[in-house]
Image (cartoon, rainbow, N blue to C red; front, side):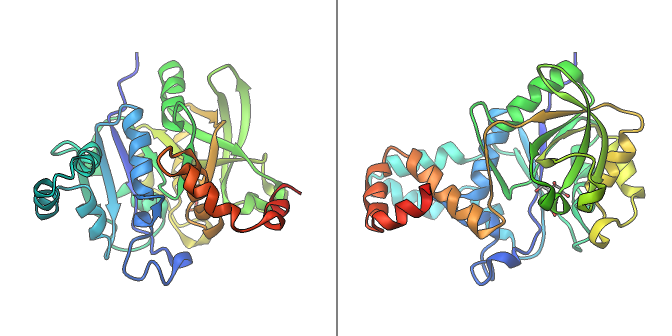
Length: 298
Ligand code: G1P
């Protein structure tokens, strides 16, 4: 029997330079998919998988994330006085329980491995999840839930995998694959942002992890790697010398909301799924004309 995964770390310190000027005063995690911030979808995925406590690793200029996960008394009073009960219910559904979120700051942008290490005191000595909020993963059940099933069977560490093309492997952490069963595949090697010719496969680590707490002392010793940054993948590689890593092939759709095209596609996909606006949304898109649609299907 493995212990339940109760805590999740979400690194949200990044500057979001790819979305300037939108991200000059608004954190990229607060940009909206339909009418909810990107980060809310990722928090929902974590909650569905049984996560009770979320640790945000933030940086300067990210205080609106903190405000988003708190009550807003003046707004709630105004909504109450105007009888806006549906809106009040929406806010209540997204509010984490008191004490259910923590914030710590990564003081310098030293890399993903360093960001996760910043959460060590809050996570303590238990296995935990990491969700990279740029990656919006759409599936039923959610990606982290699928990984929890693999964790219950194999224990150790679990990472979500997706396949890419050789031309793109330099953007990701790439894994070597071993034996596979119905819940997951054994990871036999990992390399962060390899050249095409050095990649052990086309399978990349897609932004969801279940890690054992021993990762923290290894990250403390990890020296800068790819891009001069302290890489989580390098810490995991060291951990894999003594512990199992299982890969779960994610079967849903992933939108890289750290990139403009992925962000816009996520808005289309989630907008189409929303019963309250889908018809109006389709009518708006139709205004673009048949040539536009042809361009999509050809
Ligand atoms: C990070 C990880 C990488 C992973 C990727 C997924 O890279 O270091 O292993 O494949 O996220 O998005 P980044 O996107 O921060 O360069």
